[in-house]
Length: 179
Image 1 (cartoon, rainbow, N blue to C red):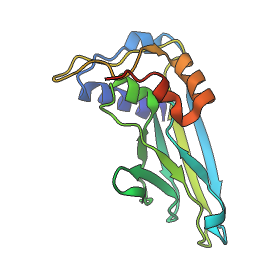
Image 2 (cartoon, rainbow, N blue to C red):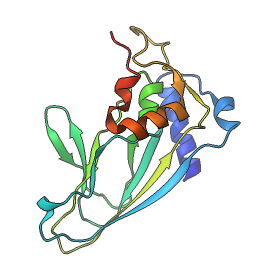
Image 3 (cartoon, one colour):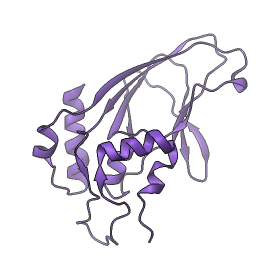
C-alpha cells in the first residue's frame, strides 16, 4: 500500500507541475496508518452516526469499502450529502488537508462522513492514511498560471496537526490568508 501511495503522491505533484520535494520527504519518517471500521446493522439509523463529518488531516486517504453496503457520504456544494457506493475491487482516494494546503487549494479536501444503515449486513471499511514527515514545511505551491498568491500561511506538518487536534474542522481557518 505504501508503494501505491508513493506513486499517487508523485502523480498529484506532477499534475500541478510541482517539483516533488523527494529529499525533504524521504529523509524523515512519514506517517502511515491503517484504520479498520466496522458498522453493524442498525435498526434505527437516524438515531446514530457512524463517523461525523470531517476532512482528513493527512496528505490523502485510500479507502476500501467491502461488500455492497453503502455508508460513505461526501458533501458536494449545492447538492448536500452524496453517497459513494462501493464497487468491487475499487478504491476511493480522499484528498486530505495537507495536499489541499500544498496545492494552494487546487485539490479540494473532501468533507465526508460515514452513516450507519438498517440493512441486515455489517459494513466494513479499511482506511489507509498517508502522511508527510512531522517536520515537513507545508508551503502552498504558487508557480502556476493565474496564481493570485498563497491561500494559506506556511507551517510545519506538526503545527497543522496541533491545530487540527485543537480546532478539528475549523483548523484551516487559522492558516487561511485573507484575500
